View 1 (cartoon, rainbow, N blue to C red):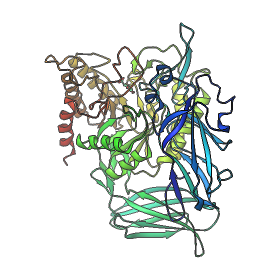
View 2: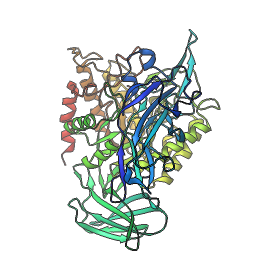
View 3: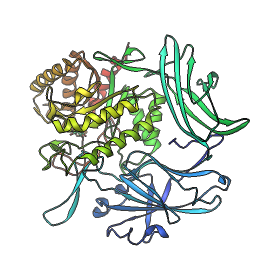
Length: 593
Ligand code: GCB
């Protein structure tokens, strides 16, 4: 499946805007076949956006179950004879779609795209009525997991275990796409470096026969290499490499032809770079790299997890201002626009699946048993593992051509100290490596599976750990926290793998100042970062630091969450807290050769 793109043989029409919407409080829409005509009782809803932020009634906002979306769209009349599809970038957490009452299909998983064929239904020049039934419930068989429980008052409630709001809706763009019936179906780019020559391998899958021609052009549009075939290795003498500070992008055009006829054409950007592990170092283009940056969230006031180019660029501007060279897409795949930007800007990405909250000793970021066993026939089981494998497949399929992606993160803070966890994760590591042998594979280890108790990290190419010494543990006692952090990092370092500390931080209320540097104050956040940074600098195996988090974000209500999680270095409105200025200086120094 290829992303929508306008080319000489392809056209796209973006369907974003105000759609009709209805929250199915009574769960009646499926029985009443709401896809068969105009949605009864509809109200307006923005696409893309999280519906939760645009409805003010609490019961609506917290609704779990079905959400109905509908729009009427005219299929361009010039599309006759083409294959017409609907490409949905994100419907959280699953959706079924109808066109003029005909069911097109369904997709499970809220953060990755899917494509449905509506060639048979769409009549070029006519309108078609599109109806989406989006469903936002979480269960132990979904990724991420959740459970519906009945409270003391007998009311059913959706519970989830991850520490961010369970925003839902159509979160990214929806496209109508016209492609030829015989077409380019998939393109896989991998790159290597041979002396000063870049080697770009391009594997093209097509439906229908024909000849494939690949042309690689530099950033000025000049042809630098070309070859014929479905599996070609292009050699680029004196290649300009891709990396932070020099995000040079080539562009490959792929043409499927028959004689003089151009059957289909598609294009992808190409960054020539290699990534490898050498002992306890990560090598980018053969040189050691040190990651500065954050785990983030797609999270903004009023639109929740809805994608917005302007807000994305504001995030990116903050990343540049603070001298970050990397991010982790905690805790789910981010929009393709964001991934494109990371390619353009030279930001390294740890690309994470939505597998977060698979640990029944933590809930919403807080340690404490959740009343379930993580891995069992009734909780995370074979079905969950199959859903997890599927998101890994879909993530790699979507993001495999982004030079910015250097690590696949299979999960955030799952249970990893038990035999059951090992049995669950081992095949997932094997799958990820089989799908993509060119990148590093890891997962993010939690504090309850400290060194040397973890049984999953042995399958990873690198160690990624979240540690809260000085916050959840040893709150307010940074001297003891420092000893504990050092001792644990030294333990992990003895494994001989590179370590990235993917989370460490303190909740910090912007504007709260304290001469005594007490917890929650801006002074404490800075003191905590000074302490942690001192330790990270002492341990050679540490090759990356991602303080938690980039910005404050919304969570479920909780007794340690005041209008959300406040561990941001930036506020939710993307203004720096004092510690951000300190970090900016530190990272400026790290950038110097
Ligand atoms: C974690 C989680 C993250 C939470 C954070 C916290 O370990 O990975 O999702 O938001 O802790 O602030 O508690």
